[in-house]
Image 1 (cartoon, rainbow, N blue to C red):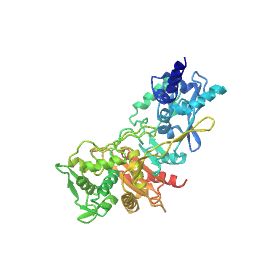
Image 2: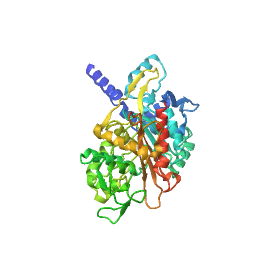
Image 3: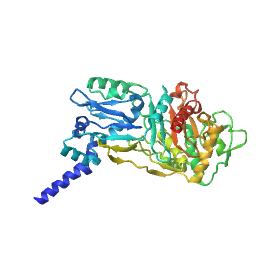
Image 4: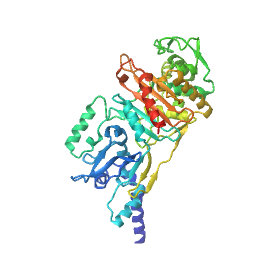
Length: 475
C-alpha cells in the first residue's frame, strides 16, 4: 500500500508540476480551455497599468476579456476567445500564468483550495513602455509597416507596433457568429491586419540596412578597416551576369576613383558594397549575419519568424546583391533592431524578451525573466568603429532624417526594391545616444509609404524612428 501510494503521489506530482506547462499548451487539453473562462484571468500590465483584464460577464463564460487601446496593443496582447477556443499574442504565449495553471503557481493553487478563495490567474508584467508604444503607434500612423524598440544592453522590448491593426475586443467577444464574421473579414483584408509585421508576417528585403552586417563581416575578417578603399564606378556589372547595379544617385559614390568603406556606408552606395560582398564571399557574410540572429527564431515569448540569409551556396552575382540587402535576403524589424543593438552593446547580441515578471493575485512575484546573451557578433573595438560609421551616417550622410538635436544618433536607412514597378520597402535601424545607448529601433514601411518608388528610408522611415527614440530619451 505504501509503495502504491508513493507511486501515485509521484505520478500526480509529475503531471501537475513537471508536465503542467506542456499539458496546458496542448490544444487537445480541454481543461486548459475551461480554465481560461472559469477562472478570473490575470491582467497583462504595461507601465503599471492593465492593458488586458477580465470583467464579469452575464453569460456562461463568467468572465469577459477587455483590452485598453486595443488597436495599439494588438500585436502585443493578441486576444483570447473561449467561445472559439482560440488565442494569440501574450494571451496565448503566457496562458499558463494568466489562467493560473502554470507550474510556478502550483503552491498558490493549493493554498486557495485550503483557504476557500476563488481561483485566479496571475498578472503578466511586460517590459514594454506605454509612452514609447504610443509614440511608435502615432508615428507610424496609417502607414503599412512595423516598429520595434529594444534596450541594447538587456534585450528588453520597449515597443512593438504594427499597422494596419485591429480591435482585439471584437475578437474576444462571446457571440460566436459575430466573432467569426469579424475574423473572416480581417483574414480577407489584403492589407493583412492580423499580421505582426514587427516580428513576423511576409518578410521584406532589408535593403541598405543590411550593409551594417556586411561592414561588420568586413571588419571581423581582419582584412578591412573603415578606411579600406573599394573601386568606385558608376555602373557595376554583376559577376557572370548581364545585369548591372547602380548607386541610388545614378553616379559614382563621391568623386574619386576609389571610396572608403566608411564613406560608402555614410552615402549608402550600392556598388562598393556589392564589390565588398563578392570579396568577402557569401559564407563569411552568412556566418556574420547568423551571429546577429539571422536564420534563427526567437521566443519573446511571442515566436518570431526567422530572418533569412541563404544557407545554400550562392554565386557571385547573388552574393553581390546581398551586399546591399537585395536578392534572397529577408528580415523582420526585430532582426534589424538586433543588428543595431548588438553593435551598440559593444558587439554582444542579447536575446529579445517582452516579459519582466509574473505576479500572483496576492502581489507576490512568482516568476522573473532574466536577460540572456545570444552571442558575440563583433569584438568591442570593431563595434566602436562601426558605431562611428553609423553616427556619421546620421550626422552628415544618408540617414539625416533621424537627427536629434543635442544627441548623437547612430543609424542606417534602407530603400529596398521589390521588382519592376512595385513600391519600395522603406527602412531605418539605429540607436541613441551613440555613446550610451538606451534604445535600438527598427522601422519598416511597406508599399512605399504610399509614394510608390518616390519615397525613401530617410524621408519616411527615419523620422518615424526619431520620434520613437525621442520618446525613450525623454522618459
